[in-house]
Image 1 (cartoon, rainbow, N blue to C red):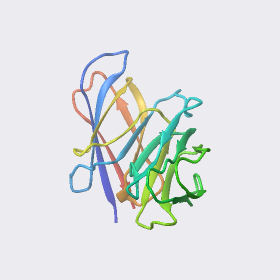
Image 2: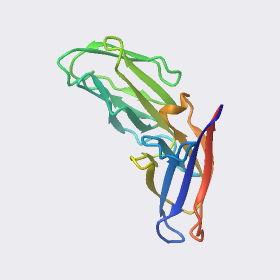
Image 3: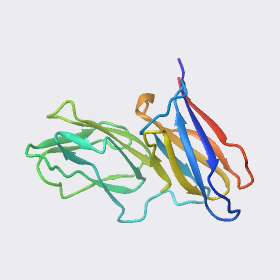
Image 4: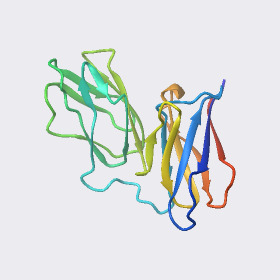
Amino acid sequence: MYRHALILGWLGGCGCSMALPWAIEVLDAKGQPLANAVVAVELQGQARTAPRGTRAEMVQRERQFQPAILTVQTGTAVFFPNFDTVRHHVYSFSPIKPFDIKLYSGTPAEPIVFDKPGVAALGCNIHDRMSAHIVVVDTPLFALTDATGRVQLDLPPGQHSVRLWHASLRKPQLQMQNLMVNAQMSAPSRLRLAED
């Protein structure tokens, strides 16, 4: 069985040698918008690793991880502050970054540095209903789709790679398609991503 996601890209403006506002809409197999899909665009020659000192947070509040999906660039240090009055025990068995932060309150002194691309599923050993994902990408050009299934990124003209992940795909790998950004295009680019 295949689950399809359709990405529609179109130009929102014109400018031949500079970045163009490029909207991407992610749809499921039935043509419905997919909210909270990770869209990451890799440019040729772009640095894969985040600048030294890049930080992010996966907060625990009201016995939930916030946000449920955190996207970071490879090399980002992620802190796990606990704002609850109870202690949490955060872990991941995901191949890209297995870790275990034993019962704690406040913020652990050492962050977890995510140095490989992919998807890390998180849990709490104390609260089984707590779950989240950290999606690690080799680009600073990423966003989560909004309720209408859309993101907008400023992209230079040329051939790029798009990486896509959505929780409904049930796989820890991001899927890849090529994307041509062309200032002369009058019709949307269409990229189809599928899971078997």
